[in-house]
Image (cartoon, rainbow, N blue to C red; front, side):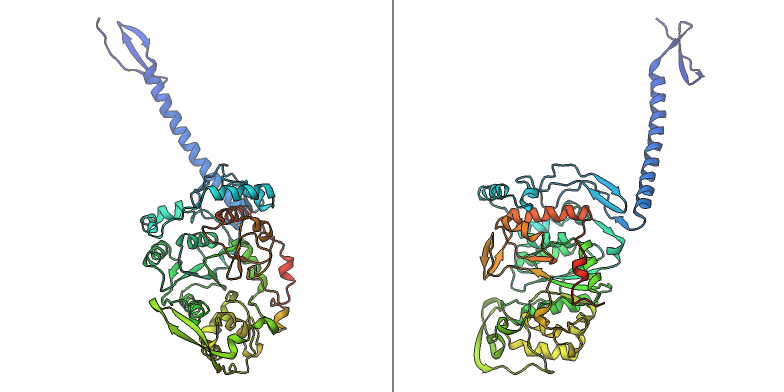
Length: 477
């Protein structure tokens, strides 16, 4: 059988000639039809993408800036997200449906204080002890920085224009368990903020290497330029924060406030809430002040000396030598090692002669970090910016909440509560900005569920009642 082939374009059809008869062949027609439809579909998709971007911008009105287009990013700590993340616009607020980051238990019920779910969580943790990420593993995890930040959740957040214009500086003190440091950093990380990490000079080499690897993936996270061998109750703990203060002040970033943290703390306010609260503070410091019986006078009435130990450590002992009075007619006030410090206060700490004289006096005090900040802030005649002029004991302190001798659902270590799952219901209702403390491997679902709670508050732009903070007596008006 002989076939002859001819092509004719008529109304887009390809025609075959079979023995002189016109016959229809569907294949070429279908190919051309598909190509046309693919082109139309491609154009349609591009137009839809452009429309969504314009719509997003107009609906946010410049107030809501989404910094990641990852809609359902993996949670940074390898939990399974069982519910698809759905984002919608409600006015100027970007919201998501509640996302479960923990599947072993229902964290929402734990946060609500449901005893049955809390009991289930304790049983589950007994049967499934936590396997921490080895410090050395961070060298592999950070070998590709873009992949690391994506997979560990450092690209999945929202930042309002208000937050972007109000950067915060942090110092974080770490000795071990880099995973816990990473989890804290993830909770407070925003690209406009800046972070100084102080690694104890006596920490294992694997810790130093891991922290160096993590900070190498960010341009706003760095290791302090001068590390200290941190001694419990010693002066080096205070010096570590001051070293970070000096480095942060030298960086070319106009941060507004400085907050110092140990790696075992965790926020109970979102970055957006912290910014709104600090704006209300308006330059006032949030530094604890105590007088009277709570001052522990033996710490500062006698000179304390150091006995060197291995690896740069030392033991502190009290001598019988009476300590001199503080310089510049400073009244002794006790407080906490942690606080919220205005930028101008940090400048005062670094450059003012009176602040340096007091720092020198503190070198022979036991736990000087619990006196230095308080004495600067509660002696207004020194002129420290943002200081408090009223009685120290009358000022509410909201930087961090810790339990000392109160009912604790976790365990006590050195008199401080290490929180468990049963504490979460109380913690999330606190007015403080941070809580202290958590241990990575002790009741790990406590930290896991608090992470889930904070994650959902962040993406639902939930804001605590700000009237409480507006009525605080120490804010600057």
